[in-house]
Figure 1 (cartoon, rainbow, N blue to C red):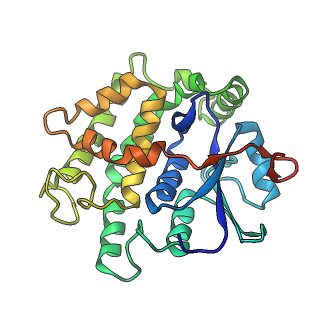
Figure 2: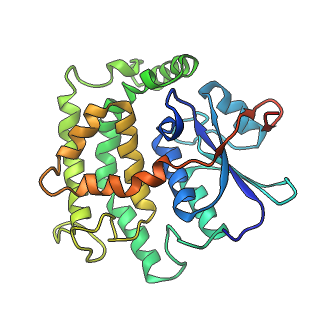
Length: 284
C-alpha cells in the first residue's frame, strides 16, 4: 500500500464470528479487494437499522435499484484523520481502490490488454448473474434472517416483504421444495463452469488451463470477486445449498477450485472496531 492515510470499511452485521460474520455478496467484493491488494484497514459491522443514519451522516445516498440504505461503504482518511472520501457501491469502491493503490489491480492496468479482458469477462458473467438474481436469490434471501441478529432480522424481513411485488415475506419467496429455483440456478452455475473451464463454446476471454482457478487463469479480477461473493452468500445462508452448488461440477471441480482459491480473501479481516453512528467516529 503506497497511499497516504488509511481505509475504514463497513460491513453488515450477522451472528457469525470472526471471518464468518461477513455474508453479503456486495460487501464481500470490497473485502476481497482490500485483502487481495494487501491494503491495511480497520472495519466495523453495522446493524441494518443503523445503516441509513450512518450513510446520511456522510452524504451517501440509498442504493438506486433497491431504494434502501446499504453497505459496503469505505471511508478514506488522510494521515491527520481527516476524511478524504466516503464512498459506497462495490464497483465504485473497487475502482477507487485500484486508483489509490495500483499494486495488484483488479481491473488491470488502465489502457492495457488485461484491463480489456477484465471488463469483457465481467460482461460475460451476465447469463450467470441473471439466473442468480431470478432464482438463487430466492433461495438465499429466504434463509438469511436466521443468521442475523434479532434486531437486524426483523428489519430485513419487514424491508424485503414491503419491497416484494406481492408483499410476501422472504420465507415464502421460493417454491415449496425450492426445485424450481434450483433448476434455474444450476443452469447458471453450469454456464459459469464453462467460463472457468475455458470452454470454446462460451464467451471466455483468454486460454487458461482447466486447472487454473480464476476466470482469466491464475490471476483474479473483479469478476472473480462477484462470483465468490455469490458463493459465500449461498454458503452462509445454507451449507447444504453450498454443497449442492459445488456438486454441479463434482467431476471436474471448477466451482470448488474457484471458491477455495478465493476463500482466504473472504475470511481475512482488518482490525475490527465498534463504530459510534451518532458521533460519526470509532467508539471510545
